[in-house]
Image 1 (cartoon, rainbow, N blue to C red):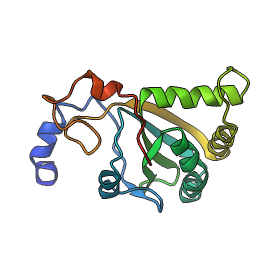
Image 2 (cartoon, helix red, strand yellow):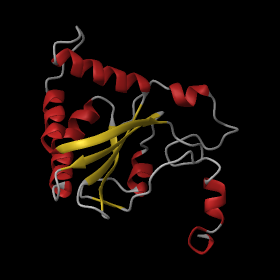
Image 3 (cartoon, rainbow, N blue to C red):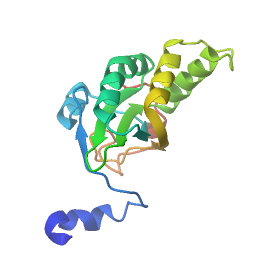
Length: 174
């Protein structure tokens, strides 16, 4: 462990509360860390989707996500920061989206309105995004996360961070 991770693991393990490691590879259309920094993508809320898809359809599904889901989500202030196939199996994908609490709730309300469950402003395109996932997904989980200060997404450090860094209302730009 120490030969591979060095001191990093000792520091990272203080913040880690569990999890399952996966080896992933980005697909065309998934931004690199340099592109994320260059574009100034930041968020106070990150949506982490780990989905199981039909065997062998990871790259096909993610190509559809890039074409159909990424632009619709971006219109709602939910920006892709990672679209990965899991390389150690033939059934999982990982997608991470940067946003804010307000933008995420607004997009979910728009989906509910398109489904006839809310009287907000509907975006019918979100139904297509939902259907795309349902076409490929066999199982999965979505986690909501906040960024760690000092990362490309978060405040520069704990001392500079305040509650406004996590409750900002300006959605990230794609």
